[in-house]
Each structure stands twice: as C-alpha cells, then as structure tokens.
Image (tube, rainbow, N blue to C red; front, top):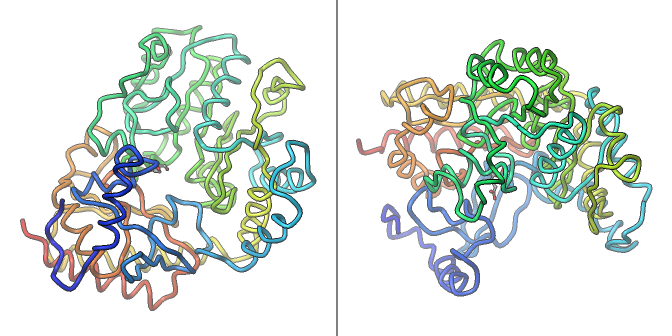
Length: 437
Ligand SMILES: N[C@H](C=O)CCC(=O)O
C-alpha cells in the first residue's frame, strides 16, 4: 500500500470497494494493470467520466491521460458518440447477423488505411492478433513467428513470450499455464534490432510465417522505432516471403488517421486494430491485402468466428468516432497539444535537474525515469520504477490520472483544453520538484 497521500486526499471509498472486489475478482480487477501493482498501491474506483475528466467514487476529479488505455481520443461521453450508441441500442443490442453499420465502419477503415483492402471485425485486440497470425500461417504454410521483447499483442498463449504491459509491470518472465509447445514457434528479438531479425531469418529461412510488431512499441512505456527499423522488417519479410503484421491496436487512428504506417510510409501485409475503432466499446479487427484476407472463412478455409463480432453498438461508436477524426485539422490539433506538453515537461525536467526523458509521438507520450535513451525492453527494464511510483501518486493527488505503470503509454485526447494542459504542466513541475532521490 502506498503511503504518500496527504491527510486531505482520501481514497476511502475506493479502498472499501477494492477490499470487497478482492473477495470477488482475482486481485480485485478484471485486467491486471488496473490493480496499480506497478505503483505499489490500490486502484482508484471510477464513478463516471466526461470530456477530459475522470471522476472517482471519493469525489476527486482527474485529467485523464489513460483514456481507457487509448480508445477515448475524443474525450469521454463525446456527444455524437453517445447519440450514436443510444440510437443503435434502441434498434437492438446484437443480432448475430450482418448489419449495414459493419459495411460503414469497414469502409471508414479501408478509406483511411490504404494497406487494408478487406477487414474482419472481432471483439478485442487479442482476438485480432491471434487471428492475424493464424491467417499468416495459413497463407504461408509455415509455423514460426517473430515477435519483439517488450511488445504486447494481447494475452493469447503463443504471444505471452517476453511480453510488455501488465506482464512487464508485474515483472513476470512469461505466464504459467502456457504450454511450452504453444510457444516453441514464437521467436523473439530485441525491438529495434534488425541484425537479430536477420539472424532469425538466416536460421529459419523457410519456416517463418510472420513478423508481428507494434510499429511504435507502447507496452514498455513508449519506444519509437529507430530510423530504418520498420523498413528493414518490410524488406526482410518480403525477401523471405513472410507476412508483415503491424499491431496498430494502439497506434491506429491515434498517431495519424492512417496510423503509424502512414507516418512511416510502410505498407504491412496485415494490420491489427482495436481501441479507437470501437470508440470505447469492445472491438478489434484485422485486415490487409485482399489476397491474404480471401483465405478467411467463409470466403476461404481459415476459420475464425464470433457471436458478438461486428456488434451494432460497437460499430455505431466506432463510426461516430472515426467520423469526427476524419474532420480536417484533428491530428494537427493533437500534435499541437502534444508539443505543448512536451515543451512543458522538458522544461520541468531541466528546472529540477531530473534524470528522465520525455518521449512523445503525436498524441502518445511517456516519461521514463531512466538515464539512457530507451530503445528496447532491456533498457526500459532499467527504469527507476520507485521514482515513477512517487511521481505517479503525487500527480494523482494533483488531479492528473496517469497509467499506473512505467511500462505503459499516456494518451492525449482532443478534449484537453489549453488551460488543462497548463494545469498538467504545473502539476508535473511541482511533482517532479518534490521527488525524493
Ligand atoms: N497495455 C494494455 C493494453 O493496451 C493495458 C490494458 C490492459 O491490459 O488492461
């Protein structure tokens, strides 16, 4: 239990609810990162949210930089999204049959992300990556895959190998319960290490079905690809007839309308989506080249299904969200907000002589308490998580809600007004200045 709360800042009701939750839910939560283990404390229970703010059950209001781990790019309860979901819910929650809304959302994604010629909606990012890998294996007739240490692609067995996010936060090597046979075809390389990937292809020239990568690694903090890294993955996969999968569950519609592939000008074969395309409702998707997607059942033999896939409420929220994001100037505005925060945090770090680095790409950022530039998981793991925890709790008391782990990314929403950004920078300066070394 963390101890840095001042007397005035009480989380008594959250603590009460967490005690009860621990009797009912493993660890008191339905996803490990919510338990605040990464900052040595107990979670804040949320009552409601609107715009840039979260409101907890003890009456505190926070500027939200978690945004439900990414989806809420417009801010919470955005009017056109709420209206779309209400309207859809009045027509029925789920039919297990096709709807026009699936065509509309599919078209919005396909028009925004040129590498996607066909798409299949599922219910989560985990389902998206799992299915994309099955498809890549079906397409190539090969079994092995390459993933990168510290990247997290959901919790499917074969991908819980040197995974980031909650696995990194809890310091787990991997997960018990995953049979060794399930991961024997999962090869790993260090992020940003082209030579390691070349070596794997040299060792298994005809066996690698796919390389799956977060084009910006956002589950070990925030690690941008070094220049040439993504290009080398494209070149190597092409040369070895393997499938290149971009996991854009976080970066899709976040760092540009066309995701990181638009920024990097790289065309993957398959892309995984989630988060923003569901506007805060459970959704995922995988899509890509028509030739590969044509293998998906019932068009082809690669089986993948889902009772709630393409759920009408999720489709409605996604359509309303993407419609807003496609309006001119939205990504420029996110970039401007990001720049304001970057300048403010950088100055605060300099003013207080703190050894930390502020990393940002578009509307994603991370403050690493690390003396070295973080380029991969090995370096990320050297970050000072105790300092991060102090900073986290101080920021919380100052009304700023950050991801409760050094190994997660912060998200900027369009709902953050200039005065709120200034408030965040003031809080950061105070909290960084108060850090005890
Ligand atoms: N980094 C994870 C997904 O994006 C955090 C969310 C979770 O695991 O619940």
